[in-house]
Image (cartoon, rainbow, N blue to C red):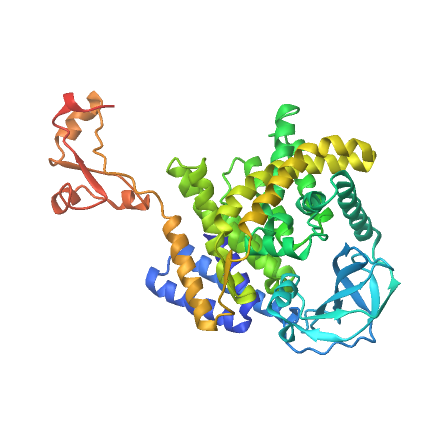
Length: 533
């Protein structure tokens, strides 16, 4: 509960500023008045308020939001803020102009399309020349692309010059990423190679506009963006290797697993979904190390709050919002399915996919202005194929870095899965697979968010345990004591809150006989031969 309060407070403050901090403080005060001044309750509320204030303070350094009208001085150099995407004779960059600091300075991110030469890398200082177009002045589809990259405006560069190279580490990671993508494209020509590159590195530049539209209309674009599912596969493979060799619970191999997860997140471009997933995976491994069962709801919220404090501009990123919403929905729904004995099979896949789609709809609708009709079946088909293709493609890419001909036979099974995935997306993403409704007004967006929260709460509701008559066989030394109890004696079966059992009293048997209160059942201790251990 403490971690959720801290993470939610930080997110609210970073997203809404001082108004968000005031709202958290008001909610904490109301909760204190309703729940009483228990030490734990007071501590949790205080932590939430402090986190919200810290988030609001950090929000002053947030990147200027989309369409804010901030003027960019193109005479000053900008910094390449994201790994460039090379497609044909063009490269697509995200360039940050100005400085972002704790004193309120704001950096404006611009999506720049330039020639393929000179090639830029993350951290490079570049000077570009061209005309700016704000996001509010472009078509809705292009505006969605800008929002996905956190840009407030776009530019087609007439010229670009790299005036200062970035750090060697950032450039080295970018080079490894581009070489992996190139290796996979050579091993699997055509769209299969583009898809495999997207699955492994997140670089899916090269799809035709029609195929990209098919991925958009089926809600499967997340497959080619390195996110929690990719990091989970990497962590699972490393854990399996450790279990087959030195033992996955060995401290040394757990350190190797954490390092492997972070190395993959860095090579894939260190985007918001990958960083959040790396934080959650590292915390989960640490919890297992100390014999604790990780609570993924707490870890997701806490990781998101920490990222918002470190980089407040991330809360404006569509990828960050979608990643947090989808991950939180899965963390809420999957444990309930497992508790009901439905943690595997088609029903679990359908429920998990529906939960992720419901959670992300309030964020997607204002940006894209459309509702996909085939997103659930498309993800049900595509997710298993991507889970098969991604590790095989990663293995082929690593082999190709050593010797390109070795990548081709290793990539063959991944190519089959990729082609099947593309065929499914093309079929389900045909025209008419989505309904354009336009960007909804603010109140409609709030209503859709409330409805999504209610649906997720229904899906995540704890399984209701059927009424059971609890019989205990008393030991001989206790039989005389039990005979002295009022008959019938009440035994408490705690369903939702274990504290109810501590609050029970034997006199409750007279006030609440069997069958009149959901939390109490009666065992007749006088019928000892009928009792069971």
